[in-house]
Amino acid sequence: MKIKFVTLILLLTVINTASFSQKIKLKKGIATVNNEYFCKYRKNIDGISILDKNKNELFYFNWSPPEYPESEYIKVNVFSENKDVFFIPSVGFGKYAIRLLYNNRAMVNDKINQAGVDKIKQKYSINTGGQTVVIVNNSNSVVNANYQMVERRRNMPILIFDETIEQDHENIGTIQIETKSENGTLVDYVKVYTNNAVLVAQGHADRNSEQFYTIFTSKDNKRHSINVGHASKNEAKKIISKYLIDNYYL
Image: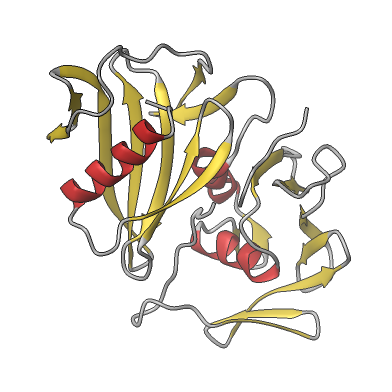
């Protein structure tokens, strides 16, 4: 099945330091963050291996996995006792892998930190089959790709009341934006549901440096970048809702 997935993200990139930027450098097989050693690495045409100081392979990020040769996903192999293998949206290359591991503490003191790996899986991993599996409140929830949308006149104004989305006097769904601080960076996480609590889309935005929300729609596993400018949180809800409505996701 051919999946058209314009790259998360993203997904989504969390940026750190007091000036809200990270200095990640890849040079001669050594990756540094803010001028401090983080790991060794080895690149090839298809991806990047993350190594410890003894050049033992800890992670492999495959940019062009054979399952999805159009590079719509990155395949992450974790060489730990758990032997985790999962897919995340394709949103960057070498430095992105380092940033992802660093920000989520998936690699600490030259070793795999399973809690950090689990955090990445919860935040970003996607089931690339016919149904999408997402993590909601630490439990697996299957998203119905054939959810029903509320019948109404789509040319009517869109109203946001706290988390409720209304159009043509009908409750058509809900939108939630939660702001979290991650390593000194404020990140907005958004989730949109139908009025029957079926997940329509989810994503995030780095509010310190980006004007775009990266959104993934459950129906088709597509990535969308939505420009909200410097809108307030409530206005951002309206912009995102309108985008999903205009494109027949809600």
